[in-house]
Image 1 (tube, helix red, strand yellow):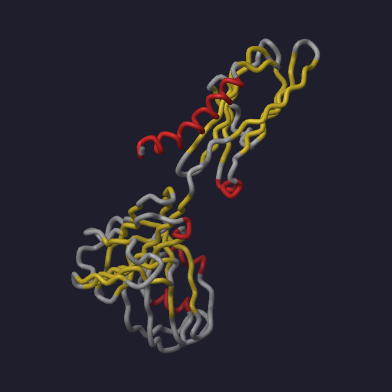
Image 2 (cartoon, rainbow, N blue to C red):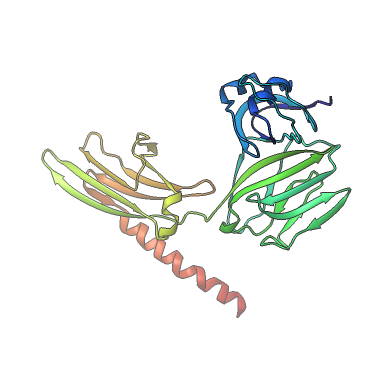
Length: 302
């Protein structure tokens, strides 16, 4: 019996059987997955069962006749196939950029490689040095690399999802998964400031960090800094509300918004607990830059 070795990984084993029970098969077939015993459940004919296990190899067994199982049942096995899927990798990319999805540890002896999107839509297939690109949303935006990596150009947010690379060697299929998340870069935030004077020269500060594009709010995280030092990690929201005094106030407060592919920040400055410094200069600088940017290209065309 031929054994194909694989590096240790958390995998999903799929047993497809007819007229036999899973317990009988595992008791008869010498699979090196003792951890699977806790997942064994009897099941009826033509039923597919899956479970998680740790394994370093698997055995392709095309035909097998199981012995009577612990429940006293016996049946002929007409087909028994195994495949496994690696634990999905995570890749993030900025919309409009190029990204490469690469699976390591592929066999040099495999006869066919097929990339699919969300397990359904075929993208490209390699077989015997012939490459076929399928009609899909990725048409003219993908290329298969020399190591069977999938290169996607001009990525869109709609490209987010799970990509499957099916590798076939000697009739045995191994499916590798990799997850892609395409995100827009975060916009520069806006800071709204509310101050309220309190006794003993203390001040109640409420700083609100707003993002102009509401569509990206769900995918961003917030980090606050006082004098370039981060606030506690539990202050991870769009509003910073604190009370400060002359001894502990910060000369600057920064809100940083970020997602998996980008980050932007905005800073305000204080000379005393409730007194802003240079805030108007920051606004004027921002307005000046916004006015100048569209003018410069126009000058180049004159």
